[in-house]
Image (cartoon, rainbow over all chains, first blue to last red; front, side, top):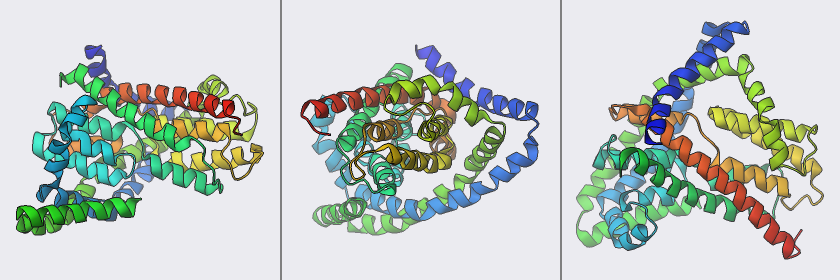
Length: 178
Length: 197
């Protein structure tokens, strides 16, 4: 299982790129100019992220520098351990369903403290990548059609987020021996 | 909600700093935080450009449509209340494919279109239908092949293997999506049993 997950990591990207290019070529898509046209939007997309990340990086670094982060991590350590979540990544998990930029800032904080290639770095990456911003999706999707009674959707979304986080811990434990 | 969390991070930080005497560090963190927000985003340009370029090729080559067709049986299983030929099913499958391929920006508009089509089938316009709840559950968990942004940030931090996150993310999102589908099904049954709509 370990070997399969590691192999998947190195194969998925090259395989996907080749599949896209070859399929595009066979279907007579002008691959080069199409690529350039799509890639043009990359700059704008990254720049549009700036205000969100500035806001969240400042907040997270204030939270970190003041020592409040350590209080949250260590103060509630028994709770995190009971849930089998390494305390260092717990703040990331708390923020993930609420704010994508916020949890990204938390991920960067984990990279800085423990290293990007450490098991904790891989776990932070996986947690960030493996769920979407539930509150945002619920607001936007239901808001777009004027639904007021969302029934059990929020409960399902948050519980699924929690399970995704536990699954991330499990997956990283298999691969990197956390 | 987001206002509250943002404020909470600041207020908790400043209060803790006042108690522990770390105000100088906090004052510095305000400025370095803003700076690292900008450098981080600019560093994302490379990978995001690459991925958006490749995705445009995938879209033009009809890969998204092909995947949507391949997912038809999954759609019929997950959305028994939606007629297979209704435009809602098409939008749902397109949204699912965009999520899997990581065509991030395309997934949300497609999802909103699916919601609008589902609303036409919904007998009570102010209450979420079963299919809507399922769509939300699948979208918040969303199976992911290529987590573009995370790979880009890992590159910036000089990771030896930025794509190492692909395998673990695939495993975690498969489990998460499975859980979301099961939970959605369970909650639907419970709400029916209690006689809710």
